[in-house]
Length: 163
Image (cartoon, rainbow, N blue to C red; front, side):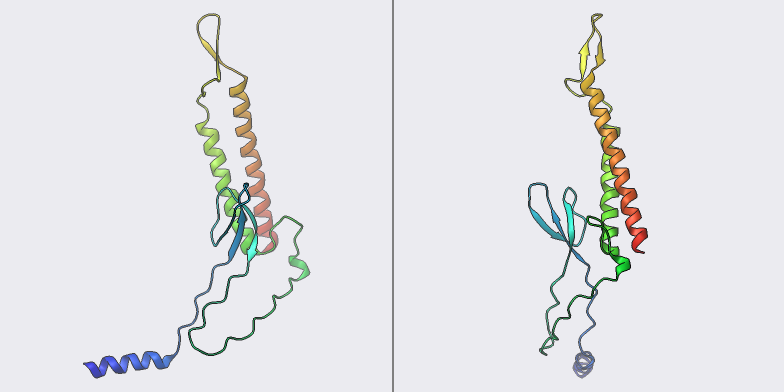
């Protein structure tokens, strides 16, 4: 049994290292207060600054690493206007973030129908009515949903353009 286990380990070692797993792209996000976050997933509440080059995987074979290749120039067809996605992966990430923010805006609009403190004004007959603060908040929530829908449309357009 020991000879079999040793032979199996020797065969695995002779096969060489396993192929490297594909790495997810890493993105740089900036919060409104200036904090910077690097992540391979969408960071809610932060602005996407762009994709960053991930460090190469560690060299476990003991052989010298090949010199890094310079980044390839993007073809003119993929050049995007300033502020929009430059790669398909970045466009997908922006679309996911836009959809998430749209869902949040819709949820806020739906849950915000109940009047909050200070949004009712008393009437002469002893009742109350919704005041301007309530309607201003409702209008702001509706505007947030409209803007979020526009961002989703723009992000979808970027994805389609880069396909």
